[in-house]
Image 1 (cartoon, rainbow, N blue to C red):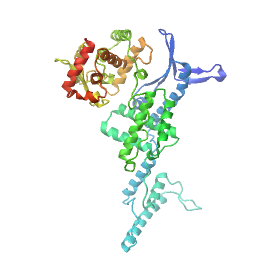
Image 2 (image 1 turned 120 degrees about the vertical axis):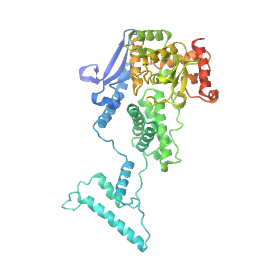
Image 3 (image 1 turned 135 degrees about the vertical axis):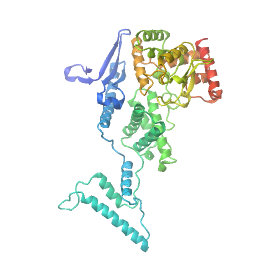
Image 4 (image 1 turned 90 degrees about the vertical axis):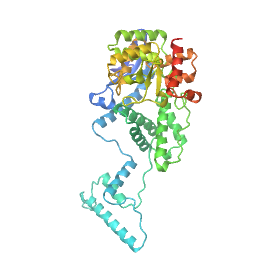
Length: 485
């Protein structure tokens, strides 16, 4: 959709991909950036449409639109480059290493030191000099010569670097930049986790955004060693001016910290270097970028929960979506934790039925505390039993969604029902986790037991609960206390 901004035709500006959404129920409007992804780019981006909320006030939405549009254009341009096989620019360090490898492939030592002035040393040095000169002459012979100077013309950048290094006895490796740090971080991360294509793309985009903020804020691609505390604070301030949420600023800074920490650990010349992004104040008030509930979601009201559930039960085309909502409501799990369940992860018999939230090939678990047994009580137990019957022996409990990207598909399907009931952007599928948190609080369940159920980080007394069976027993008692009274 195109929106014309301005009071008259002479001053109007056409705004593409602008969508106004009017709520008949609330009598208000909200705005978002909505853009269909070209078919050729969908496998690369892992989505068919880009939708980004812009807010409820038109002026603020228009101001935010410009930045959003720039970022989407950059993302699409990068995707097109990938589809067309256009490689991204290499860093000076990468180009240096390529040249070193070329020299070694020629049987020469790129780091050959000058020898002593004894007779044997002179012979070795002369032989090495002749070999290097022969290679350099062969490279020059590939190119036409200037009739006036007799110098070769049009020498490629690759060959220029090679000739220069041939005549350098001790070439110096360029200092690692933040781009080098990012690439090493992703390489090692992928080697450890072996993510699928969509998860890999998500990690690449997230790391690229984090490093791009550094280069934009400082006006250069800095080496890791050159970054000072003043630079780190400048980057934080720049990100704060670019994104609306303080929690989002903290998340980007967490990514930057991880990238820089990894570089300090893995690049020998950086060992012992301080990470000046460590210790910056968390704007959202949480530990290392903790998200405040009011910034990312809120509990659904009892009326909203009832209406959304009734709508899903009445209008969802497939039973699996109905069962997913019931299990979310009755367990407080993350959506990906439910859609990624295998049939073997569901135990509906015995005195303490549960689901096993565990890492496996189809689903990566966020953190160690997220790997847990979540009690099945009341309607969640009934829904899990129905889901097992519906799966009919399939490996995944929800075959339609038990795949890479399946959580996003389920989220989109559920959110379409949520938005029929409320336009509040803070009312989302994840709101059910807030609801479970509130129910546990009302039942006087202490925080450590809440964390056992919800998969939050445990510390101090929360670590005392021992093995998985004991933790399940503690969590089951707490869940029954909250749901059954």
